[in-house]
Length: 357
Image (cartoon, rainbow, N blue to C red):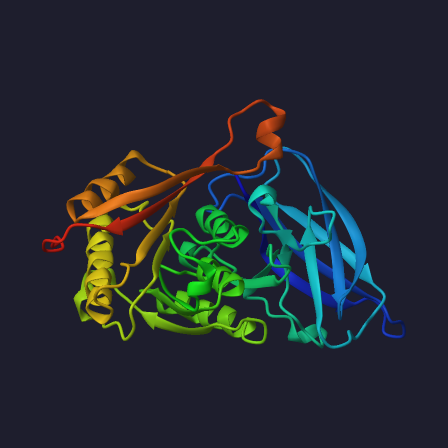
């Protein structure tokens, strides 16, 4: 499984001496799963470093040991007032904090960065920045909230789906020459999957969520990408309970949803929402290919199977299925099976009435 370095106490900087240019950065971290339900069980070396305008300097090395839940970190820096465009980061990655988003090199420990700052007191203590190297050599930056809200965190299924979508030279059922694509993401959270897609493929991206705070983070992350993406984007509220009130203004090529079927109570509304989007898209581009629905999940409970039965009832046929192992050096070292993320691709083939909820 993937583990994430998280700030329990955000990084703070204090001056050590009035008459000297040195300062102390201190923080408290944990290393947990995406849901925060387990701590990293092995040994790790955590590097604390600072990035001054692209020049990375290591400050300290701390040890995470089996049984730990919290690690206090203190590190000295000899620069009392940073230059502009500085970041602290905390990583188990020897390539200094930028984690790979290539399908065959998904990280098992995701690094934590601070937001960019120009003065010590400008440090944003409410967010953690994740930085991923895409196969197209661009860096994707995603902010997530410090705190307990799962809606504003990155999940394993999103990391793997983002890697899957960006690691291929083609897209399922579509040719790159057909771009720009129109893509809508359901339950976008921080926007990881959709924004990774937009970095790799020219598209019009619609990020949707029912959580206003999640959309705020998605919008913030989309704005980070505006100078390096040739794609257009927008963020829109979409409550699956009221999907009939949502109106598309363009036909879709793809509908994507990552880690959206873990709650059995929301599955009927999700399937109804997908059906409604396909119905509207079909009306906007009659005679052209229907949108493909791409869903990823790290199976967490047997009740997720209800999604597939409801999709079949609603007229959707499964076109592809890929099971991807999640790297985990610790599990491999003790001979345990790796956890997996399942990716499914559906198309609507029933020419009758799309099923009601």
